[in-house]
Each structure stands twice: as C-alpha cells, then as structure tokens.
Image (cartoon, rainbow, N blue to C red; front, side, top):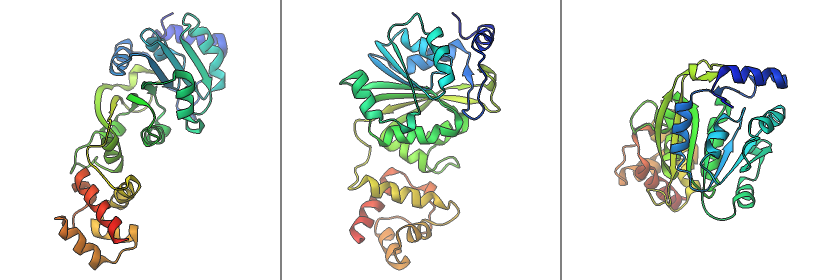
Amino acid sequence: MDLTDIRTIREIEKKFNFGFSKGLGQNFLLDSDVLDKIADAADITDGVLEIGAGFGVLTRKLAETAKKVVSVEIDKSLIPVLQYTLQDFDNVKIIEGDFLKLDAKALIKEEFGGGKISIAANLPYYITTPIITGIIESKLPVKTIVVMVQKEVAERIVAKVGTKDYGAISVLCNFYTKPEIVEIVPAGSFYPAPKVDSAVLRMEVLDKPPVLVESETQFFKVVKSAFLHRRKTLLNCLSSGFGIEKPALSEMLKELGIEPSVRGERLGLSEFAKIADAIGKMH
C-alpha cells in the first residue's frame, strides 16, 4: 500500500467517505524522501510516540524501524482508516484522543516502560507551539523530537540572537534542546496542499540546560517579559513585568554589564540567566 500515491489516498477517501477537516489542519505528507528524512532524524532505537497519525503514512515509515509506535490521533473518523492502512503492522497502537489533554508522562510510562523514546509528528499549524512547548516543559523521557511545522515557526525556533525571528520560543527551545532544520518542504508535497511551505525540525533534548539558573520559572518569566513588547526597552519590559522600580532595576542591569536600553532580542541565554537570578535576589 503506497500512501504517498495520491491515487491511493483518493481511493481511501472514497472507501471510508472521509472528508479532510480544515479545522483540524489536516494536510497529509506525500513525499517519500521527506518521510525517510523524518524517520532518520528521529534516531529510532526503540519506541516512538507519534502525534497525529493522519492516514498513517508517517506511521508506516516509523513502524518499519521502531520496536513500537504509539500514535495519538484526535480525529475519531480516522480510526477505521488507520486500522485499514496499518493492518500489516503488529507493532503499532493507535490511541484516539487530544494529545494536549493527555497525561503524556503516564502514557509513555505505560506504553514504553523505562528508557527514552523519540517523538515524531506532522503538526497542524494551529497547535504547533502549544505541543512543542508542552513536550519540552513537561520534561518527558524523550531523547529526540522531530516535527513537521510551518517554515516560519521552524525559523523562529532556530533563530540566532539579534535576528528578527529571535524571540521567547527561540530561548525556550534552545534552553531545553538543540534544534536544527533538517529539510524545507514545499506546500506541494502535501494533500491537500497548505498555503505555506513547511520544515522538518529536529530537536535533540539536552541532558541539562546550557546555562544554570536558580529558578527555571523565574528565568522564563524574565524571557516572556522581555519579549512581550518587542519595541520597548528591556528596562521598561522588566519593570512592568515584575513591578520593580526602574532606578533599582537599571542599577541591577548595569551591575550585570547589561545596558538597560537594550531590547530582548539582543540577549542570549546567559544574560537572561543572570537577570533572572538577580531579580530573584531583589524579591
């Protein structure tokens, strides 16, 4: 069964009377070369958790290598389709549900036991950021995350300090992972074709963050405050975010060697860590 052949997809659509949901952002990948690259990037040694099975095109590719694939699919109308397209694989389990509402840590423990797994997904654009942040902030036993996302989202995640794409999501992902863009995927590689291009994003989960902080909660509060109003200076953003008087805050920043008039996009992880620890001592 070749699920990268548009004729096969249309036959399945007809067989199961399936209609693609715009609300669920359903665009299924048909490029076999990209599927190979996703599977390779996932660095599969044992188990894979897939978010969103679709018609099972990526699921089949993952199942060829993985000991076990557990795929969470939110669209219940796809369950009979998947039972059909994945009938040749006995190492795949489909769970109907919304990944964002599941206890992912309990699910991984129950389905995979000990050890770290890989996560793979072709994510709908509207839930990309909540799912990525949810995965890494939950500190799941995951070694690699490989996701298909909107190209501009991938560019924001891998963005360097000082660039226009650099923001809070860049800091978050670089704090917990080592992200890289594996492949740019044109819109025509999907059915139905979306309006924008996508990218395969690989995130290697780090054993420990590249900077030490006294409080991760405080660290990310600083980061979010710094990027909340991109046109405002760091001093103004932090003052409103933490309710600290500007003279005291300005003095603290200068002691850290950070210019109060700088904007958040000019700061790297180490500067944000210093600020977070220093504000923690002021409170």
